[in-house]
Length: 247
Image (cartoon, rainbow, N blue to C red; front, side, top):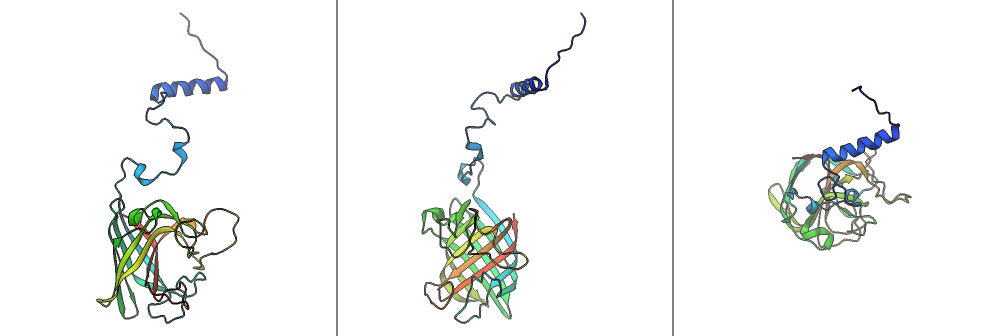
């Protein structure tokens, strides 16, 4: 028998290859692994929708900055969108939490001048549904997100937490049971000018942050208010770390 050759047009050849791929891979039957289910494959999933999600997060932040100074007297601005009153610090932040159980500890330590400070954030509780019991992941907050206050631009939280913290100065308790909030978030400050471009008039729906970078922010504040300050608290400690390492 003489050999024979089948000539196919490019369009029909592509169709034949697709059919053969489906047959040999075994993914042609609906419901089998790897088969898209409508638009499910393109939406943003909650962490708990992943079958191998552990809920355990371990991160370190380096290259820290204190907004203003621990020695500031009212009136002060500890958001400092213009980036004019930033104090580089020696120290880091360690995060080790179980997001599902809302447990764990955040410990930040830094030096300003001759004084050493340590912050322990280990009691978590939610005051809003989006905070998911006190620690949450994969959610928008601040700005015009509808979650949290508008003090900062709308940002994607890779991880966030709310609760109570203690602050120590040179080994002695300085503040106890102060309200605390940490965010592993998109980069908020311009790496060259150090300004937060907020609030601004924008034509795009995303927040005024840079998703190409990441930072860790930590806020610790008093319950007492002081209308001379921004934010309007008697005490508001604001730190951020620009170098984030996931362990």
